Length: 564
Image (tube, rainbow, N blue to C red; front, side, top):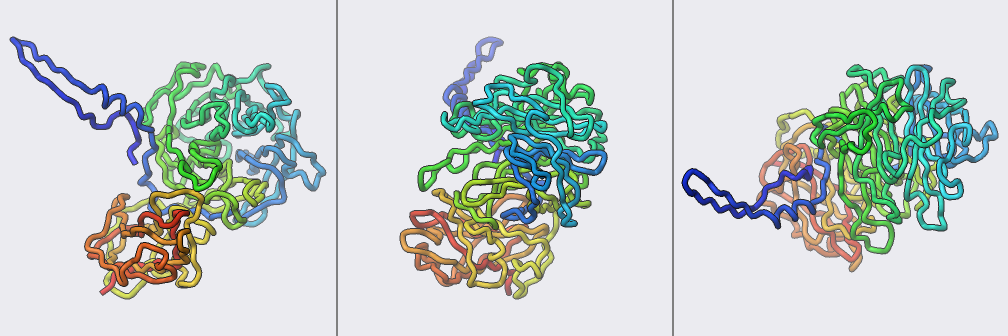
């Protein structure tokens, strides 16, 4: 999708008149300019990864209690992480509940030996700047610098009676620990950030003690205005912009020394004078809205820029920002801390209820310590306590990515199903949404087990398909439908086949369908062959308008061939 800057083509009426040596040009563009200003700014889609996929639920959990878990990798090889609203890693030590807890975490999920220790909590860490009856403390970011730790903490609304609980963050400050998280101090007697400005602070994770920053001597911090995610009650504006600041290592607690990004969304960097917070400009702006047409009343019209993490993946030389909404993950990548930021993965977990094996969550965090040596596998933390699932501990799931490398298809015609993992390189199933979180059913070779796309949304378009890390010739897709129910859904009203070429989805030509696809509930549990002219791509999908009152489709298997 276009990045949504103000540089689109204008249709203008031009009158050129020549008199003596003067050319008079009259341009009438008022209506077009007004329309231009209404267009939402949408983050461009990435072309850096050919394949990106994430586990639908947490696959590694720990004996801990709490949410959020921003992390820093310190010089003693431990992670230091603060959780909100819980006990932290304090079960064994008899720790009490607190709105904020600092923890030391050792081990690795790859080795199955992650353990934690509670270090401090509550007032031992920092204060609440507003009315304690209305606000509590929430950790948003942490960084390890020179053997010390710096923790960003915001005031977050906790007033459930007002309807504004979790819906505004008016103030924030940064606290320092010189003894690895046991004691903390503030440098000022008033919040560093106030008036809902830059109050969700997330430090750029540059590896252990910032060792992966070989480019300059700055510490970087990102920020959101107004709230840590969509303000469901709209007491403040929803965050749609991600901001960036830099500071010298000795000035982390002195906002008057911070320089804020003042460049453009295309990554042309420039910086404000120290302390000029009002002159800041976003490094990322994404005004997409999700779940705008729900089937039933509930949370909707969701903004996509939220508190997550920004980490530098050194093996891939890429910066990753992991954001989320109430029902989705929204991940971005960039070549520099200031962008340009592009979206590389969106995962729709559907409306509630969720189940353990398929649950999204909030506060999506990638610890740099949990990035593989080749950068292609990472562990992502997130939490949820609603929708029938309680994933409320330091828990993780795998994210896998493969950078794009241009390839030429060289497979010959055969009866080989290119969708089967045994037959093609790094195949990853794709979907618009998933009800059970079982995308592996698309290519498990079993036409009995089915998945569908019910997500509580009236979707105008639905799809099922695959992405590969290399290109293939293909000319046939075999679609085995899942369950379809009269009036409800489970079928496509209309369906076509597309291949991905140079990151563009292109309709195949001269498609022939056997038997004819009915476009109604009679598609139930039937198999359809779509044969088309020889083509190529590093992705393929069936796509169309979903049928039924609940606007969803179903699938049991999707086979792909380059057939004789």
